[in-house]
Image (cartoon, rainbow, N blue to C red):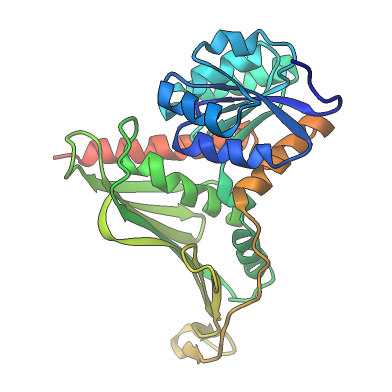
Amino acid sequence: MGMNRGKVGLAIIGVGHWGKNYLRNFNALSKCEILWACDLDESNLEYVRENYPQVQVTRNFLEVLQDKRVRACVVATQASQHARLAKLCLQMKKDVLVEKPMALNAADCSSLIEQAEEEKAILMVGHTFLFNDAVHLMKRLIEQGEIGELYYIKAVRSHLGLIREDVNSAWDLATHDLSIFSFMLRCSPTQVMAAGSSFLKQGREDVTFITLRYGKVLASIHVSWADTNKQRTVEVVGSKGRILFDDLNALEPIRIFQRGIGIDQDVSNFGEFKYLLRDGDIVSPNIKMTEPLKNQCNHFLDCVIQRKQPLTDGEFGADIVSTLCQVDESLIAGRC
């Protein structure tokens, strides 16, 4: 089987729920050719045979690694396998896009970063929300002072079901919001606290409340697998207004509420401080939304072809894992 010259030869490792989305998006991009799909589940391989007959399928991961036509691998397996499989790909000098979280501990993150540097390979982590047009707009609005001084950020990510067997709700869902916070604020949290409960399965929190500080900015994240109200929101509150990002609202994903409260600094002493209330319009900016995962896949291919550093590189992925480990420590300390 030949390959079109100039195209990136690609293998997708893990073609379950999320891997199928990678298949669909990479298959639509002219810069690459999907050569292999690898999975241990025969029903997933049958799905590939039926829908992508041009793609070779295998249960044998080593068969993929030994194919010299494969220039890059996408690792979209269970989180517990991310680090092991990504490292094997890097050792065979393949560029790697590994789904988030890149690993489940700091040591494995460091090992992946070192391996990528040693092999001069691209290592990118699949934090999809950093390729979301609404998130980029929210970041620009904050930096342009649209809502004044930033006070706090709160995120809610809840649904009923889709329970993961390999990680708790924080590793599954809060990963998205932690990546958004770090991207918008350009820093890591200086304080991490968390509380959670295991209503559905003992020892694995299906509901988690996380409180963080990013310097002066306060942040909170609520994630749940046990909530009948499906919600995907990030709210940014400042002295002059509020930005609401609702990922479930296709028509108005971003709304700006030009209302806020601040302190009148034009006074002679602290005792004369006055609160200033600001009342204004609700604005829904027009955003030309493109599929975030497609943007992410395009970015990865550009990094492979141009040998440039990914937006969500190994260091960024490791930083999110470090925060999640702190969340786990806080959860364990608070368990009854």
